[in-house]
Structure formats: structure tokens, C-alpha cells
Length: 90
Image 1 (cartoon, one colour):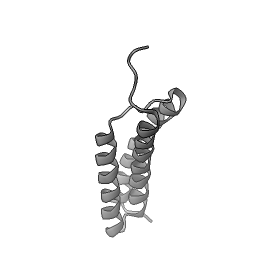
Image 2 (cartoon, rainbow, N blue to C red):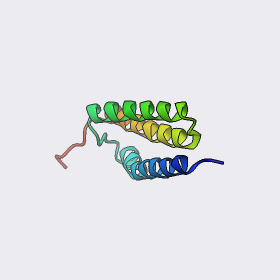
Image 3 (tube, one colour):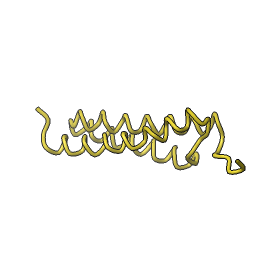
Image 4 (cartoon, one colour):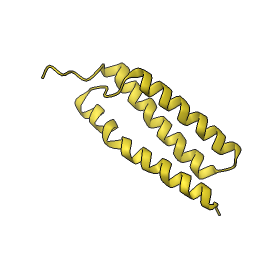
């Protein structure tokens, strides 16, 4: 049974992941990269580092949720690299 800390961290990380889903879907639909490369790299790397800390503390669910959020940032980075920046000339 997960402890209260694991549950709270999991819910927060899952909320952050849920918040990114519309951005990821928009990027795929519109073929645009909506974030800067620097933002995606730093945020993704930091989330994976935090997930590693959660693993070391045996907060399994929080680590998984945090890694999922980090993975979504990697997808946003891939979109930015594949599609380029948002074009404002429309």
C-alpha cells in the first residue's frame, strides 16, 4: 500500500502529465513545435532526475508518474525538432 506522500506526489505528477496532453495533441494535429528547445530539454531532464530521486525513496507510483511527465516533455522536444517553431505568419 502506497504511503500518503507517494499518493500526493503521484496525483500532482499525473495532473502535470494530464495538462501536457492537449499540447502534445495540438503539436501532432497542427505539425508545430510549441515549446522552445531549451525549455523542453531542461524540464524533461529535471523531471527524470526527480523520478530517480523518487525511485531511491521507494516512491514507486510517484516515480512512474514523474517519468511519464518527463516523457511527454521529450515528445514536445521531438515535435519542436521535427516540425520547427510555431509560425505566426498565418
